[in-house]
Image 1 (cartoon, rainbow, N blue to C red):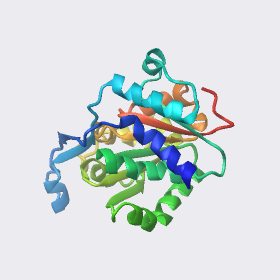
Image 2 (image 1 turned 60 degrees about the vertical axis):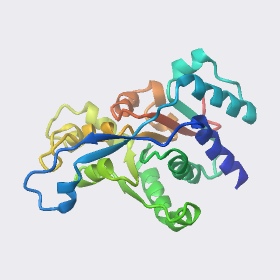
Image 3 (image 1 turned 30 degrees about the vertical axis):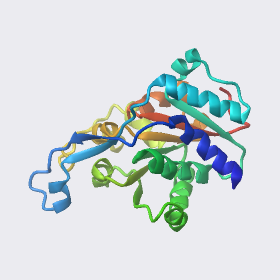
Image 4 (image 1 turned 180 degrees about the vertical axis):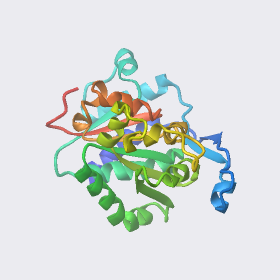
Length: 256
């Protein structure tokens, strides 16, 4: 729908003028691992951006003028940082919009690492289902694009390594409650703390691999993600070292 494409373009146009460029980082092969994949995958691939803040702000102001919303200033941009909000009314296809934004950002700028943060198990399951049922649609829209998606599971940490090393679009879905608890638990043996604990199978702490990719973090219903930018969830979100954050909220809930 036209308004959905408008929402997609409103985000993607922020980076108009950016060149396709990826960052690489070294990942040590897993000793004794028979899998050829893990033996070869010694290079991690991350997102990277080169454009300067002044150009980004100028793009934002043009987009805001186009959409009839107040324009950001240099001061407000520096205060908010790389956090961009999209308001959509309930029932207008918010999930579809941010999924399409992933593919459009990849097409235009080569970004490949995305983390979708959701506020509840129900929304996590709904998002995963949306990824399943739209697979053929997006392959048709984006020339049979190759991509992988998964729900973060502390029992399947090999997926985190694949997320870091994959050169195609990688989409991780994570429930903020489970992730936030990893920062609150004092029990080093707690399942919620696995993301911060060195793993022999990975050769790293899972969180260290995640943040090396400079992921684009997409927050579904930020007001419910533990207080949004200024709430207790901020520590958990910042730990991912996002290149930038996209916040998709229902317009009647938006307060900032």
